[in-house]
Length: 225
Image (cartoon, rainbow, N blue to C red; front, side):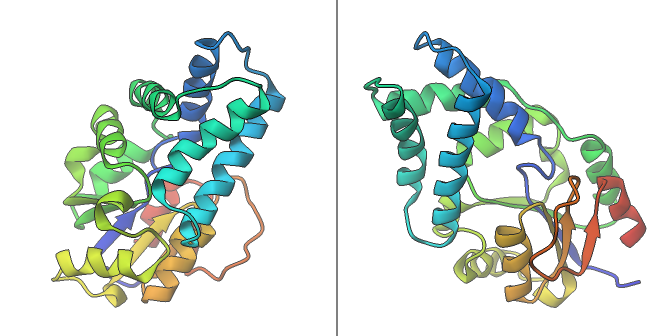
C-alpha cells in the first residue's frame, strides 16, 4: 500500500453536496423574481452553468463570464432583464446559507487529518468556498485552501497545480493523492501533473479517464490509505 505525503481534496460534490445547495439557492433566487422552480427550469440552469464551468476549465472563458453569464442566459429565456452582478450576489448569499455535507465527509477528514496533511484544491470563488467550508465544520482539518480565483488559473490547468506545489514545497506530486468527483478537473488534471488520483463516483458513471483508484463511498478511501 502506497504511503502519501499529502492528500488534496476537491470540494463541490466531493465533500459538500453542491447540487443540493444549488437547488435551494436557485429556488430562492427565482422566487424573488416571482418565478416558480420547475424540473425543466432547473435542468436548463444546470446545463448552462455546467457548460460554462467546463468552458472555464478549458480556458475558453473567464471567471466573470461564468458567474454573470449563467444568470443572464437563464433569465433571458424567461424574458426577464436583470442586473447580473446583483443577482449573482444574491445567489451567492443563498449558497453561503445552505451548506450540505456529503455523508461521511466530516468524519473522514477528521480521521485523515491525524495521519496526513490535507489540502483543498477547488475551482470557484474564494469567499464562497471559505464560508461554506467554515459553516460545514470542515475547514479546521485542512492545512491550506487553494481556490482557482486566488491562484490565477483553474483545474485541470498546469499553472493551478504549479501554484499549489510551490506553496506545498515539502510534497512532490508523485507523493500526493488528489480526491475528486470530476474526471476532467480532478482526475485528468491530477494525472497530467503526476499525482495519483482517486475518483469519487457515487453514481457509478462510466469512466472516460484512467484513474488510480475509484470509490463509490467516501469511507472507501480509508481502505486505500
